[in-house]
Image (cartoon, rainbow, N blue to C red; front, side, top):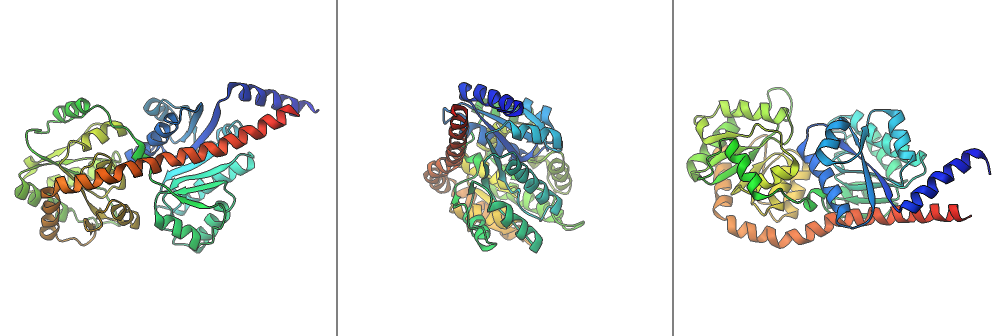
Length: 397
């Protein structure tokens, strides 16, 4: 046997004896987005709950930050050499979750995630699309590239039916597409006392009921309706007697935008703007202290559902409507672009008043959503186990 192969099989023997499956996770990590960090935290939690020996390595924009936040080994996702070496030593690549395969943000982003998947193919390891939210894919080239790469993967799970439908529409025929749920539904919140301490430290008057508000800058220059958001805040505070807590999911952009909105309100004293950088588990616990959540951020809505807090969505993307339908809250959606503050405030007040009904409905749906989120890890493990079995066969020859 050639020396190169001998050294490779010595490495494989060491891995087989350790019985540890090595999985690389590709996503939008280390970029300050709490939603994507919640996805990674949910993935980590999902694998931990399987009781299988698994090592996760994240491809991150900021490896040191990712390691500090999640306690996972991380490598620079933009380093070709590091990504290639990490994949060569892995048993499985999972791409996701989150909205990675879309060309609304940029075509460059889509090409990057497809490039990582192709690197996985080149390394000879299984590649899984993990709880992805697919689309929009506005360009013919985007649809063609996604079809080509997806048809080479070993498994595909998506977080909603529209994502599955889009993959089928563009010609993905293999492997079978399984609809599961976002990994964040498997996330465990921090202790409630930590959430209380955060709210006190931020000066939030917790003797009042709280409405969480998560906004994002969206659209072209001048499109974001700051005055509408400000009027909505004033109306909600007046009609409900609540404190409006502005929760930033992507730092620093969301915080800067929320601050601009608060400055246009007639009664800024009715607003509390969270200023700290918190872990997904901490923000999940904070959301659990809200009576209602109003959000433009998908994962703020997922956090609310995870904590059985009723939510109202200001939609900027079809994935928002899809989530709200999944939660049985399809009537609690309004477009971010053209909503009427007075009418929307009335609808949110109705959700606030019917809190118990909505919370009970969410609680009934939650076990299935959590089980579906965990299903992603189970599917990934089956691929990794087949890979390890193949390695054992090679070693035994």
